[in-house]
Amino acid sequence: MLDLCSPMGYDNNINPLVNWYNNRFFQYSIGPVYNFKGRKSSNTDYRFFWQQPSYGWNFLGPVYNFTGTGGSASVSTVSKASDTKTVKESKPDSKPEEKPKLSTKEFNTALVSNVEKYLGCIEGDKTYEKFSSSPEWCADFVSYVVKETYKEKGLPIPEGFGSHRVEEIKQWSIKNNNFLSTVGKENKAQFIAQNIKPGNLMILRENDASHIGIVTKVNKDGSFETIEGNVSYNGVDSVVRERYGANYADLSGFVRLPV
Image (cartoon, rainbow, N blue to C red):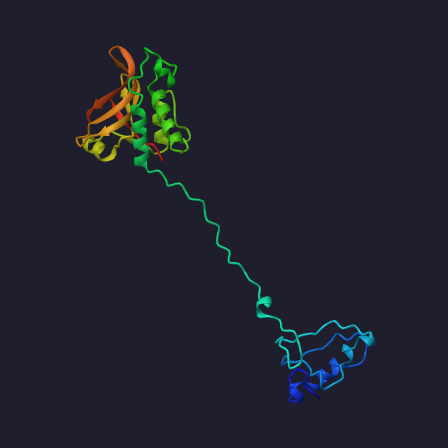
């Protein structure tokens, strides 16, 4: 019994059973079949009746084997390029450029710059009404400038921040772990010099009332400067600069704003 899976050493290394199949006489032949060496049966060794149109047989074209190569007969060659699918390298989508995160120092610097432009606003000419319609407007003023700075820098305003009442701002900061109390500190000067920065909010508790301002400068001795609204100046409530010593009696503490 012949092994059909191996090429045999016959004429032109062609398996005779393959030649027989390619040249048999019955109708609807599927055309030449190539052996496992990839060679077609020689068209000179046998009568290729399947090539004659007069027989009316349907020729479907050659069937190629695993190697796909032709032999000595005239067979069209399939180019390697046409067999190979070109896969275009896809580059990963470039991520949109992320906006650099604003540092706390940058935010605080912007806040100080913003509050300075409101120096001189007073009740007398109604310019303070930009911030509030109340005769008690120190907290309204600070809330306005802080929110303005968050918006200008494209940052979300912290949830719950801003109030007409100073005590509510203080309690908000305590709840969010952003309050630095100076009450009971043994060395307030050192504590302020090391921990308080321009852009922090100062909280005072004086005469059973609260007051708030924005720190603009901190000195090595713990003294600091602020800009505040609703401060009496020459008998008119205004936006002014103030200066405090580290041991100012009514100092309650400071609020650090999150970025």
